[in-house]
Image (cartoon, rainbow, N blue to C red; front, side):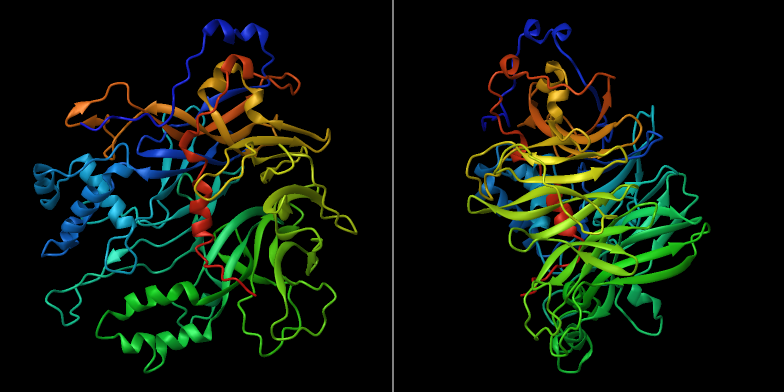
Length: 601
């Protein structure tokens, strides 16, 4: 029997050392881990009514469609070979024995074989295998026992299970209960295709990679934001791309902002449509829909966009907000882009765009140097304010109703690129970013939200070792008060008991009503297998098996002044690395927005 290795070392702390009477607790914590169909849940945004938008990942009982596996059993052979060759790399996965292999080939795998099947599916590119998306949207209503799932575009297989092939990116929830974001379409199997081989092949395709949407929790409101290229119904744009990043109510209308495809890449269109080009050459090897699937990531150019929708959900207007690069040389065919990320009630929009690196350039060459920088979209202008001498690759992420916004800029610290969060005022004649002191000089910091009280929340690195892709630094959530110029680790607002149980890795949102914080935390939970059952080895349940999972948490003020509750003595050196650092942002980045951002040199 393989020895079960704990994912982290459990803390053992004397209750006498955690006496709450000696503590000044600024916030209490509420665990919102109420999605029992997924392993991890993440806090996204809350409204002032107490409704919370969540994202879930790692579905239990993923619906593998075994009937589409190779008839000769090659797919099953690959799964068994993967398990037998790599099981030593996973502390909680094992070889697939003969009995388990028979059950797997019959389409009834045990939890271990199901885990290997999922790993195998996720490793497969192309169109010949079922797709794994597995990021869902949930809404928690106050005083509810469970969160409500909003499946958006996902569909069911014949067995009644959702495909779980979509990536649903939840972005926000309004005080009126409108939820918005962007999602991919579900992948479904085409009819078997004869490519002249020994058997027919099944290809998996979907209709679009990203589509912006707005939904109400009760189902009374449901509309999608059509990509700009789709407004011309006379042209086939192969689904287009759109994403909703924020919503405001202005003059009685819903104003949504985000990104949309605005033009087609002529070279990619030639690959799809020209005789003798890529798809034409492969018409005997795959159906045309599968070829579209392959070409689509390079098919679109996208810009920041604004949609205006009336109360019935009818689109009134769609406005291309443009890009910061101007006077583009006619021979310059690079895919410049822009994106609108947040809007306030005055209609000021912030985001990012390509700009010329030389801010004074008026006659750019065909290979003029460009950069992607934070942008303000205001009064039909696109305002750039990044100091190129010290910073690069900047974004403006969120803006409040006073025009104060926050974002990040990259800069080199001790020879390594780090993100540093800032704030500025969009109403100033000259935009001057302020960079508060964060966890330490070489810490990367990233803001997520700013409220109308001048409070910014986000996440930042708390370890100072030389990091790498395989060993990232741990991150903790932070709160910064503009009015007091005070930066806090939100973990230290909690009691020592709560700090022992939870590690808050990001503060995602902060509302205007008493500065209630929504975040995500690591917490220990009983270990479950891929079917959501208690973890077992050789049929024996391991009663004390634990795992670190991510859960959404809500922090509610106690009414005390902000005070740091240093529990280092009580907790000892808390050196365990929970879950190898917070990773949900990698999903959003991978989706991000499912627009493949090609580097413009």
